[in-house]
Image (spheres, rainbow, N blue to C red):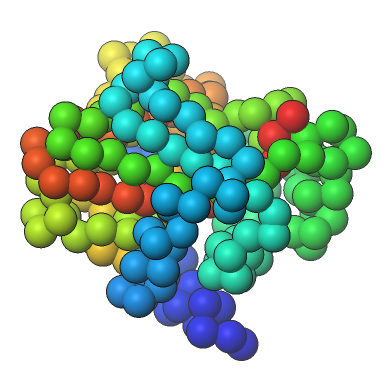
Length: 236
C-alpha cells in the first residue's frame, strides 16, 4: 500500500457515506501533504502541462480560472484517483440500486476509463482551479458526456483563513416536492471533499427519489485559493 492509499484508507468511509446521504458532501482526512500541495501549485503557471485553460468570466461561470491536465497526470493525481475509486464505488452502486438503475461501473478503474473512451469520452478531467480576491464559481455540475461517475473529490491546496478568506464550497440540492437546500463547507488544507456529481437518492414517501445537486464556490474576500478537482469520468 503506497502513501496515498494509506491516506485514503485512514478516512472513516462509513462517516463519509452518512454525510453524503444527509448533506450531499463529506470531508475526508488529509490526502495531500504541504510539499505536495506546493508542488501542484507550482505546476499551474506552466501551460504546457495542461490541455485547456478556462477563464470563468469569459463564459460567465464566475471569476477565476481553471486548467485541465494533459496526460500523463502528475503522479499524485493518478495515485489518488486509483486509491479513491474503490472507496467511492460501493456508494455509487448503492445509490443507483436505490434509484432502480443498473450501476454501469466495473470493479477496475482502468476498465471504467476504457468504457468512457469507447463512448468517445477521451479527454482528461482532472483539473486545478485558482481564485483570487473577488473570485467565485457559479453553481454547476461536471458532467462532460453521457457517462458519469456520481461522486467526485475536491482537494484544498491552500489554507483557509490564512491564504484566503471566504471561498466556501457551496452545495445546492433540489429536494423532491420541497424547497431547495444550500450548504456551505470549508475544506481544511490538504483534505478532500467528496461531493455528488449530478444527483443522489433522497428518501421520499414513495421510496427513493432523485435529488439533483449542483456545486460552486462563494466569493473570496481576500487572498488566493487553489484546489485540485478529481473527476472519475473522462470528457467527450
